[in-house]
Length: 194
Image: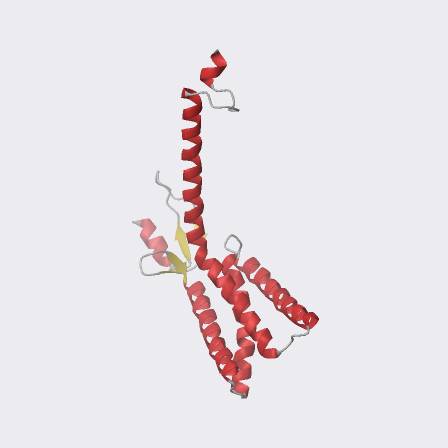
């Protein structure tokens, strides 16, 4: 009863952590959470940042398409610059899952700057520099990073299946070695006793 009054007085700025055995552990400051359609709990500011990045990438992609179509205006230039500033960093940040938010942001932007610079250096050294070609290369690199992020669950499943298959093959091989003498097989419990 007193606990409800205490949490009501605190509002949503603190949460009370109750261990499975009962009793209060601590009042830990927390971020106000919102439910993401029942799948997981995410901070409200994280969803806002995610939608802001998606909007910037979408607007930038529209600018890229307009530029590749031949439209020339100040708005197209601004949208292309927004795309170059946001899209590669957002795509790279999606690959950095194990890092803190700020570390992910810094690493993603530094990597994006390095990738864009590397693209420009390669195009200049090869003698094929053009602004549109550089833009297409940045789009391709960003798309490859997004594709790698989307393929990650698939590759994890493939790796798990390959590991299970390898374990089964190892089990079958060891079973065959136990029952039959296989040339160049390591010593097993059955053959070591003899």
